[in-house]
Amino acid sequence: MVTGPREADKALRAVGRVSLKQKRHNRILRRSLMLLGALAATGSSYFLTLGKPEMYQHIVAGATFLICCGAILIDYVATRGIEREGGVDALMSGGKLSTGLQAAAGRSWVLAEGARLTGQGSEAGTLYDEARRQFQEAEDKVGTALALTGKAEFALARGQNPDATALLQLALQQIDGTKHLREQGNILLAMGDLAALGNANDEAAQHYQFAREKYRGEADYMGEGNALLGLAEIFARQLKHEDAITSFEQARVFYSQSGDKLGEAHALGRRGDLAREKRDTNEAFIRYERAITLYRRCGDFVGEGVLRITLYELLRMMERHGEARESLLQGAELLKRAGRRVGDGALLSGRGDLRRAVGRFDAARMIGAAAIGMLNEPKDKADVAKILVGLGEMERMLGRLNEASQHFERATKLANEVQDAGLIGDGMKGQGHIHRQRNNQRQAKQLFKEAYGFYSSAGDTKDQAQTLLAMGQAEFLMENVDGARVTFAYARSYYEQLGDIAGAGAALRAIGDLEANMGRLGPAMEAYAEARNFYQQVGDSLAEADCLFMLGMMNVGSDNMTAAALLTASGRVYRAVGVPNWQRRANSYAMRVR
Image (cartoon, rainbow, N blue to C red; front, side, top):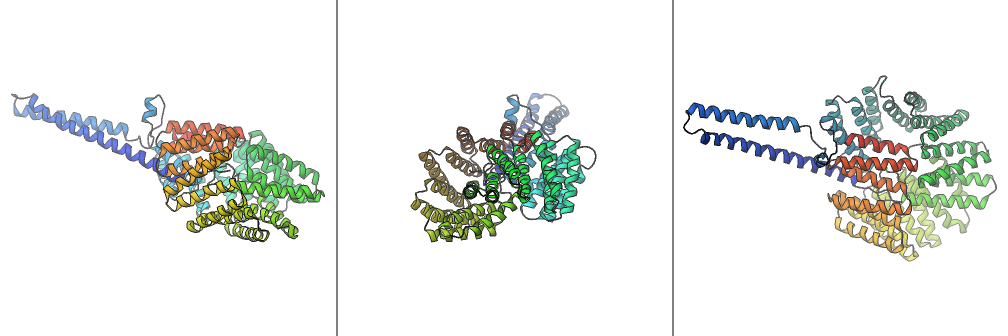
């Protein structure tokens, strides 16, 4: 499943810049015309007062000029706060938009968030700094904290953990007190996640406990579930199994009350892991089955794939060896599907929730490695290669590129030994994605071409079409825009000939990303809207929500009433799917861009 927007952050910034430049140009033009009118009125006053004393003429001309200058000053005072709202048309049609510095700051923040979430945040840091400055000038402490927290997430994605820690501490200082408990909880939760990444377990547990208390004060069940999930992961690391079991179960209850199906699946799966480790096979199997059902309902291929790999060990313990092997291969295939996307952003479709319940990846990593060690007969080589491809995609999505490359290299070697052209293509395509992420675009494109050839030999037509999307993206990153446009269009027609509606939607999203980056917002939005319709036809609600979300983000800065409406609509779909944390995000953006 494709999540798209690989380059949409550039489009978002371009929209903001074009909109701002256009408005500034219009204001300068209007005031220049007003000044020329003032001069013309002043000159005309002399003709209207012919025959009067010279002093009288000068007084009338001066008064006329001052009155006109007053009109220019009134225009400046009345319109100086209307920047970035892109909402004149919306106002004329009856919409209501906030204006002024606080509104401009909110839109700068949303543009920065769009840059970060779509995976290309080269200017996100600057946008966050601009938003923070404007929020501070507007004396909006919550907004200032939002800008600082967003920049901390941006720093964390770039591996700048000390900077992220300092920014989160500064954000917490902005709103420290009795008010804004949810916002404080969000920051404390992020601080806990950051400490957990650094294996500072005691510090992380303390942050999670403080975050839970803040969320409890707001009766925020989803927030409290997140805090408990993080706390349970720390207990599991510290081998405090009973405390971990209790916390995972409490987290599940809170997620259930909040409607967060994805969070509930995480808690169930991790609770199943602990039961499996205690060799309580019946309890573990029940938990895993319930979690898999929720992951499938949410459209989370990552979560389901990871859990099916983990289920392999449990099924072997239950002496169900055939089912164990099938579950392992299913999990690898699901992870391959999740990894075959255009772009590396944080949107959900086919990607899953990578930050919550990180222990589940450790379990899958360990069990997958053990399974490969058991499949050592010559006839098993093809299956081992498939598992390695799935594990490679998991590691690549998690940012562990060296480990992913090793998996793909081994998979390609085994595939060559069994002369399986499709599997060779899988391994080479995985390596191509790694080179793309490392910005080695020429090498990536060459690997994609070779993979396409192997898929053609194997008759894997859908994989050929998907490889075209990867090739088009590499061409785009090499600034061969026309070549990328042709390749994406070819991929779309290929999918349509195959009757693969979801694939055609993926191609349309890639086309939308391309057109948005080139500033062709009309064609870009048309492509996203058509992709949304395709996803509706196949019932992929999560991808549909992502399309609505991107349509909303693309309108920020040009038509904010439309942007707010689309973001709110995407939030409703996210909620219906069972991922209300993204509903909350979309609604927060909608509120700030109005």
